[in-house]
Image (cartoon, rainbow over all chains, first blue to last red; front, side, top):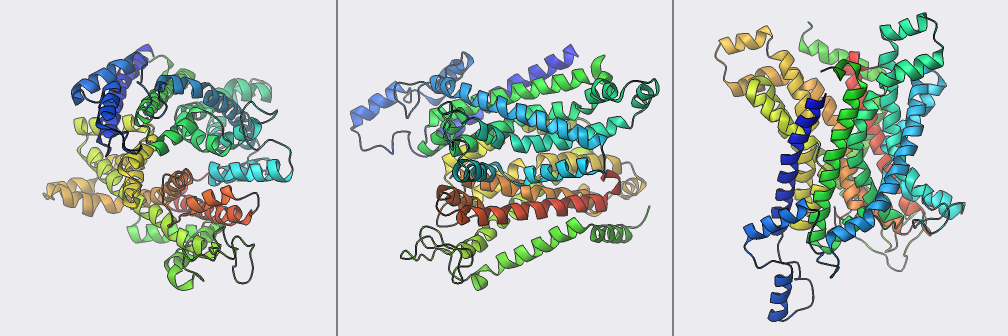
Length: 306
Length: 283
């Protein structure tokens, strides 16, 4: 158990270094300097700018400077927001995105597990068909369509909820969280239904029922622990999806989070910001994948003693 | 074990019994035909603007209405279908070529080669590829072909795993040993002996990859990082629709509906194909 954890951790470190290096050199490959788009500046100013941003040094030196900065969480200055560092920008956006992701995941887990487990227990009844059809819709309607539709219905036509913003009007967190969480609720519902169906057929469940345990206890204590392992394994990769989803949701609802900063940086060609956030995102995703793998291993009694 | 022609005809008869899959297939055929015929059946060229008209609700002259620049929405959806479906097919083909070759080589040679190749797949699985695509689009410009390649290059991982697992079960069977004994070259082993036996799972997974790829393209286009105007994919149409949905809701609803129906059709068809080719997996 512990040895698996350290093996994974050891593998994650070179992966992160390779990702950071590839990203660094890709960004350096980009045609044109970072200040080309601005109005013509004199040669001296250009020189000073390059000096400030350490662009005159040989590439290898820039690389080692940057990487040693990254090690201590310093992603350098932003090209587009003079005077602000990329780390500062990330730290401004992160709490907002984090909050959004937490709400969405809670919604997704609650709705998804509840409807998936119910569907598995009431197999081939309308309690199975209806949630599973809705789940199919959740998978086929992309976030960037669901968000605007919810805004159109609940924000503009019914005037029930605010259409944009974050932490400004009461209830403005509801629509973005539902938009981001819905697709995951759908996936989790399908995964937990499949996992539960598999477990409910096994001998130990029959034994538990035979010895007279109540159905609730059989389901919550015995079946769900194993039946929900697929959901737990899905949570790690889901973080990557949540990040991508936050690009869209934060753009639609004008939320000042990391996702919108990233998209804006991509538009403005703010290379240091893109570089820094890419490395940061990769780091988070690798960490969350690791955590969900470990959790799934720990939940699975077969692998516990390995 | 039955011979291959009866395997496929069994599968076909199972597929035809699945109403959702047949409906999905029909919708796809109609859609692809309309997309191919777009230059002849679209009532207006896709960039034709009627600025005096501006945005107008659906009418007899413009079946699905016009956008803010007076462009016919029906024509733009038809032309958008060409781009969206093209991305779906080309990127999936790229993913197929990489994934199938990777999986066959890893599975067939086994040993060290296998473990190194599959470890690479494991590692790539954990990376935020969507972010890399955005990075590539920013650095190298928003080029249509680069977009196809980039999307295809990230969707091959699951295919490689599926193909490898299939090859592992095949490679110890008698016909493979017989072919080896006859001194068949590696290449013709792959092409003549292994590939025909794993076409089923490949077909299933390819059908299910197309909607993924289309979603990815429209996601990028929605953010403004994919297809650039005046060309339009369904993603860019939805993006335009969102910008003016308060006054002209049809600009969001019709492209959104078309896209969703297509994704439904592809998913139902793919699920049906999977159940038909491998009855064990259906529940």
